[in-house]
Image 1 (spheres, rainbow, N blue to C red):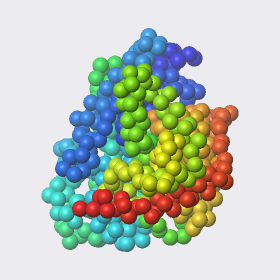
Image 2: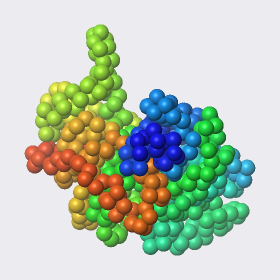
Image 3: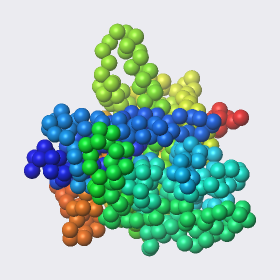
Image 4: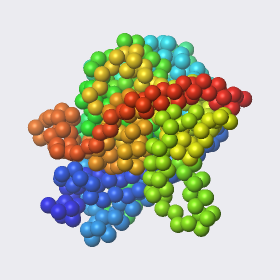
Length: 528
């Protein structure tokens, strides 16, 4: 069928992802190719010292994104979206969204970006003998308990952003196992919260006399391929304010952006991995076996079908890089020149490749917020050089690109050097890879391993959750997620691979040595 008939007959699949800087909706056809999209740009707000998005901003953004999707469909195909084969919702992982019995949020959404949970994360990590990152929901919950926040006793439901949207659309309190693994530790054997740790947490807070146990307030964890509810009449009206979309559409388990990134890069098989590099960055390596011990810089999560994954998550990636490109844009405007943003990025990124492999001694720190892997609870972007360094445009831009992946390198050294983890393929996706070849080459130098980028890399997590929704309704033979992706979606897909050049690997190591020494400057800059 052509795209118009697929949409008219209700056979298209919708994926929606709420990312840090944009909400994106992607409609895919029977061959899992994107045929329409809608986008809404948004930004988090720093309110009372915490990063948040209001529920009003969440729903306005989601509805505006869907409006743009409808407009794209009507302009391309002159047809209205009345029904769909399946829907999937994804969002930035982690954070804290507690709700009372009346369904109202008890405190503003605390996003993954907040680093105020140090005491709770440290205590839970020791109790569980398992690394609990600052941004995980269980750390936020326990920190609120430690801080004596009054709302804790009123919690009826605690979920992630994806889980919240799914709940509002379906009435179901469920979560995909990948997103669940960012709430609290998951047992890959059961694809459910670790029962020992659930019991330990309940015992830890028993003296607080709270009216709930942990399992009472958490969403139920389910794996990819299972139906996770259906779009209700209320949910349809929340999503499509025009009233055209009919209820009853099956919905797949809501997932986090880490899981959708794995799906979108065909990296759910063991010994495969991916790197997502945008506002934040993270690497995901699907393990053959558990790590020998917990590491503070390694988060243990799962694929959407429950396999163990070692995740290195960095709060900061391209924000400062984008800000510097913005300065060059202003300079062009000052000269009265036409500004093509994509061309500007391309020229600056490619100029970076002509710089010295070690950036001529220049060092940049891209910390807009705290960076746990670097031991920072707060951040200030810095650019550091000495009078004798080679201060050129090429070296400056190369230092900015290196800074975008430096902390990622620090975390992955633990996996590759200490744990001897082996990986057959790492695929990159996200804004850092938009300029062909440049982000790949920088990351290959940082990690010392070949980096692939697929033609579909630009589709991102909205496409990834659309694929998970399609997997739920388009897998009659019951294949595994990896098998279905390999046979049905990525068969014949092309990718470009860039291997690291030894001189650039050595240059990055010299840069990183200076970067590590200079972290003392960053710590001084953010000290109270």
